[in-house]
Length: 314
Image 1: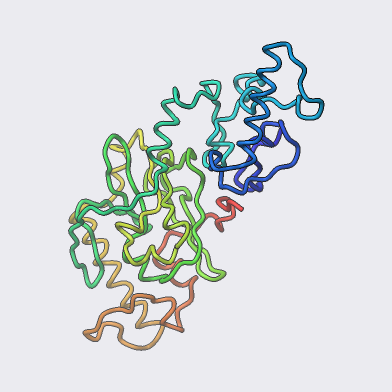
Image 2: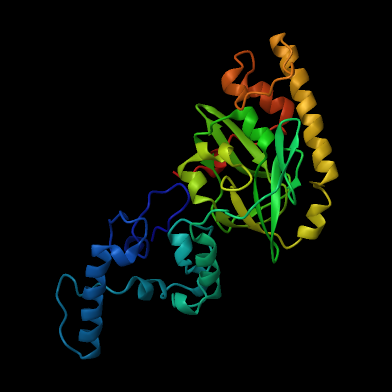
């Protein structure tokens, strides 16, 4: 049996279960709309009825059984959750014999995996031309968290980071269910051949990834605090982690200091005064030829510990 991993091609659920030998998924695991799944279901139902009635089964297709029945032959500790088979979470055991309707985790997952955007009103303060939203916590690596309640938070990059690097064209992140550690790699953003890995501001388990940001990473910089959020996490020790983050006055002071450092940095690199009464351009990397990607990463973002390959999903 070949269960799907982050790197492997999307094999059909029936293939992963070992019922068929070679079938890839072309429906992004929307099985109810898949003709192959419908045909296999009919064949397996006919086989089941024939066996129950001691009737003969077809010679070629009589060996087929439901993929759930095939997996239930495995020891319980080796039965993969359907969401792992779809490549959306790390390995997790199925405790319900594939009766997903009775599974609390499945309900939780479906609620978190729904496509949605942040539409609530957010108040912003202006700090030397950079937006800072009220009620958000900041980390020194220019990531933020917003408390969503019940131990849940959303995270992303701040306006300062988005202005430094401009339009991203790639986002790499671990799958849902992956555990993140504060100060360790959380996600990687790329532009052309450049990559930057941001560290997680808190510890927790990934419960959601912004599907809009995955499809259109360039949109992150347009609204980094709202529609441009990147991950949601469940954080069991959130109260402790918050002590290491900046909030309200300290967050304002941090952005103020970062802005002053950026003006000094640009003046040194270009020989021009970057703060002659005008605003900084929204894409420093793309609009200031004398500034390299590495200069910006090494000066303003914590040095990355990974090149992002750990998060590639194929």
